[in-house]
Length: 326
Image 1: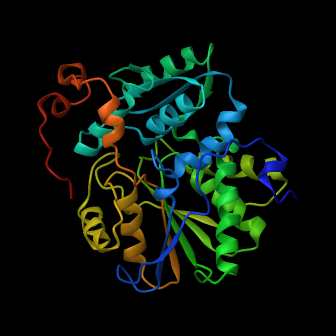
Image 2: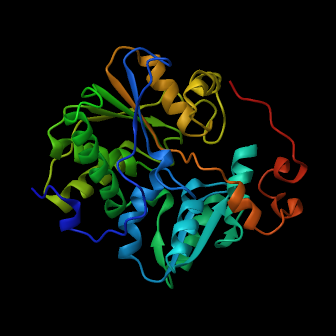
Image 3: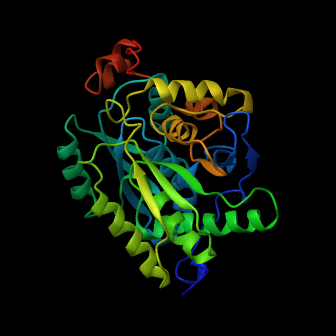
């Protein structure tokens, strides 16, 4: 077994590590938070860890895939451009929110964005562009991308050894493409930690199956000759689907406001809602969302053109906030 991801892949260090630990007992007894959202001053979050291992494996021209307002697309555009990569991305529609519009706007000046109203057609366009560019799948969830979270699990182990938190019984992360879950499950096994990684589903089964999650976990483990630790999927927070808020997500955002933690209701608030509902502990909620302000990126982007986005969702064009889904 290889204990160090750097022995099987090159790494472009982007983030400031280790990410901090905080006591979140004000949110729920027995809960701790590890905040990857502050790992970079321009754009942070879990995609930074993945990109550290993806970019060195890529040619100069890359293409990726995601929903309009994708955090992964923005992270790839920000960090790829900063290190000399030519980034293209293919987008498909998602429900509108202020946050998703801001993320999309921030990306407009950093990458060659292509669009299709149909997700399947968008996927075919991504495949077509992959013939002339290095493909980076949605979420950066490849075995090499997941190595970033193998390293993150080893980082967490060192923080536990230093007494910054107790060994968690469960670790909660949102799951859209499963790279974070896969890396943690493998890394915890290498570290000898018995924590269960609970992936809180934010996409429907047809977008991500149990079989696909298991395959990514095993492929990541195979890179290191390691075993896969225990993991599970929590389907209880999906609500009406990807991009739709829920009452529990909104409540979790309110409960963590005293900690100065910024959540969004597509991914992170749903994962925290699952951790709050579980009780017991000690448990760890892993904050995967960016905490840096998008204002500097938006200020550098081209002016927003509402009519260009009408095909995504009428609200992108009209500026109307849709009703919250409970």
